[in-house]
Image 1 (cartoon, rainbow, N blue to C red):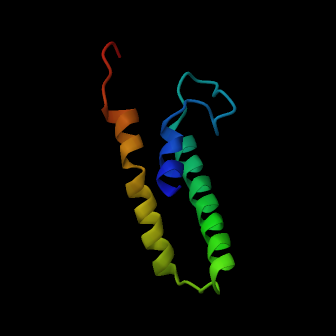
Image 2: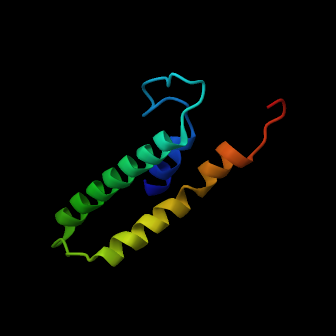
Image 3: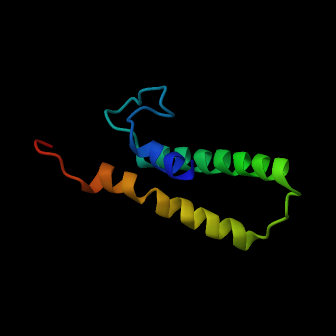
Length: 90
C-alpha cells in the first residue's frame, strides 16, 4: 500500500487524480504535496490496523524520519518513470 501511495503522484497529470492543472503539466510541488498526503493516509491506516491487533506503541521522531525516508525510496520508480525515462518523440 505504501509503494502504491508513493508512486501515485507520478502516474497522472491531474491534481489528486481529479482536477486538471492550469498548465499542461503538474508542478513538482503538487507531486510533493500528494506524496505527503499519501504518507499521512498510509500512516493512519497502519495505526488503525495496529490498534485493532494490539496496543498502539508510542514512537519518537526517529521512527517517523526512517519511515519517511523509506516512503521516499519507495517513490523512486515513479520518479524515474516520470522524469528520467525518455519516451520517443518527447
